[in-house]
Amino acid sequence: MSDADKANPAKANPGDADGVNPDQDVNAQNLPGQRGEHGEVIGTRRGMFGANESGDTSGYGRLVRTVRLPGSAVRPYGGWFDEVADELEGALDEQGLLPENAIEKTVVDRDELTFHIAREHLPRVARTMRDDPALRFELCTGVSGVHFEGDKGRELHAVYHLRSITHNRMVRLEVSAPDSDPHIPSLVEIYPTNDWHERETYDFFGLVFDGHPALTRILMPDDWQGFPQRKDYPLGGIPVEYKGAQIPAPDQRRSYS
Image (cartoon, rainbow, N blue to C red; front, side, top):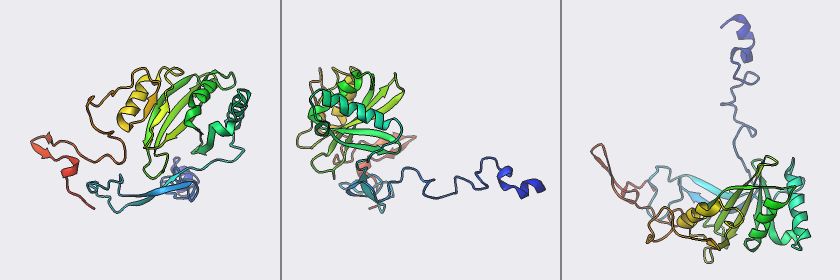
């Protein structure tokens, strides 16, 4: 290293910022996705995956993590988020639907915008998001299922990812339903691309999309019992042979907890 480089460490390594390696600079602004103490606590997870029926086989059984959902955001949301929220609320109001009855909460988390929608109003909100000229979210890229056992009364969540080709924007609509009544209106009529996505979410999470043209399993056998991606689904499997070795099923492996 030259004398000039020794005098100027930042110049010696152009990938460093102000002479500090960003991969080693641990501070609040350099850590990904930290929520701190904000949001809604719905439970505590122990172990890597929260397994509680068959023991933890990951070797991380002593991990303890608070399960925290992001809370409602307050105005201003920032950037174009306020514009979209204002337009959606105004369009619903023009249709005679009070926005506060349809939108349960608005979340801005990790610089992303999510509207939590009451399930009975989901089709109207989705159609408004698609058809309103100021919104024009023409494409739904799919629906994701989520199961939060600790979120009592709304354990099952369906998350719709909407994209506006016109305005180059992306938002989410999120709907919840209880385990005891896992019904959500289908959006296939509004977004036909959701056909197979809703079938997959039904297959793995048991969410029933009312009005779907052919809601049947898409990956699991038709006579399969249960929904494999729910948190309360037991670990299991079949032994696997690999290069002469017999790898036991997950529920037969050594437990670290």
